[in-house]
Image 1: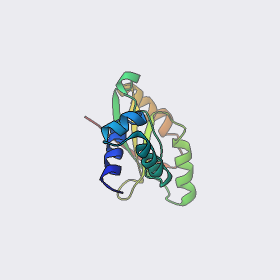
Image 2: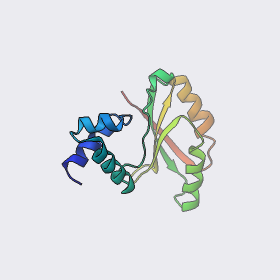
Image 3: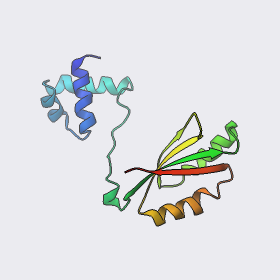
Image 4: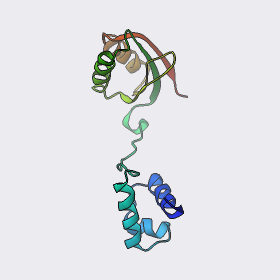
Length: 139
């Protein structure tokens, strides 16, 4: 990977919807070699996919919360059941298996504190694998 590839990646990371012509212009290449480089980066797995970043507030999700989950058991089957269950909840934006005091870190987006309370009490608490739930707010 050279500097031109890095410029292509930087431009696409800022705006993944750039047309090839606009991208080529931005990185000072002609369109054909630019497209070849992008395709090579895709084929190598450097560029895995293109996504749209949504504004949570515009979607009515004004509260961003980090929830730390400790499970009763850390055996593979328990972890898999928890991950499958948590994947069904649209409030969960991200889910990470962690080391340290908690087994999982969830990033959750909800409308407000009432929606958070409902999510914790009605969606998380009934999950049999969960032993402990702690939360922190993003400011």
